[in-house]
Each structure stands twice: as C-alpha cells, then as structure tokens.
Length: 162
Image (cartoon, rainbow, N blue to C red; front, side, top):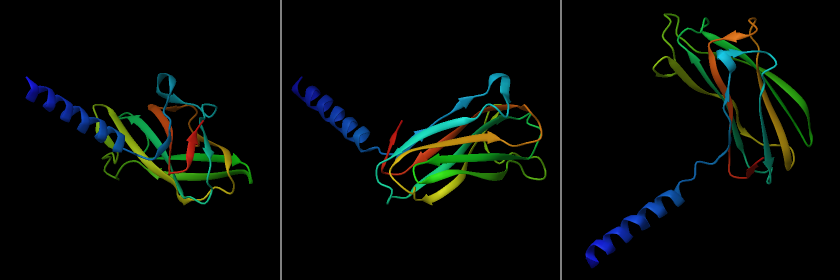
C-alpha cells in the first residue's frame, strides 16, 4: 500500500514539474471566427499587448485558417500597429497559400488548412506600454469567402496580455 502511495506522489510531482516547466512565451494568441466563413473588410482581428521591457525582442505572426474551397492561392492583409512612441503604421503583406498545382501549403485537418505566417521577427517596441495590433484582409473580394478564422500571435518574454 505504501509503495502505491509513493508511486502516485512521484507521478504527480513529475506532472506538476512538467507543466510548470512549459513556457511557450506566447503572450497574445487570438483567434477570431469569421461568421459564415466570410471575412469582411470591417472584421479586423485585434490584439492589445502590454510591453514592460522594450529592450526585449518580440515575434509577431498572423494566423489563418481557410477551407479547401478558398478560391485563391494567396492572401493580402494589412497590419496596423499603434502605441506609445509609435504613430499608427500600416504594412501590407502577401502570403502564398498554395503551390501552382493547387496543393495547399498549410497543415490540413479535414477540410481546413492552417497557417502561422510571419509578420515581424526580432521586433523591439519603441517604449513600454500598450500597443494595438490589427489585421484586416486586403483582397478584392469583400467579403472574402471560405476564411474560417484569423488571429494574431505575439511571443517574447516581457509582455503582459491585455
């Protein structure tokens, strides 16, 4: 009986240490589901990140999920960012989503394809404080059909999710 109790305590201890040691450094990880899989211009994906130490580098990524019925092999988006010491900036990105033969580049699960695409790497925010990041689709179609959801991922070691 005592051996069983010791074994249970050891297993629980290892599990607690294992979970406590997991640190993904993901500070913001948003996903916005698009109603009826239609992403309109007005449906911006938004995240606010609190920066405590602007000397640290951060990585910003765009997350996207679409169905196999998505009509294009690419997507254009606009990223808007504003905050202390930073006038509102806008950058346009194009991402390739499929090969020329139609083979999707994302990870597939059933009828959905998932992407985590780079926005900024080793980025240093100008000052400490709260920064707003917005993503909007910038394709000719409005709404853009067969987009399941989109999101923003910010990783680093010195931010506080807001």
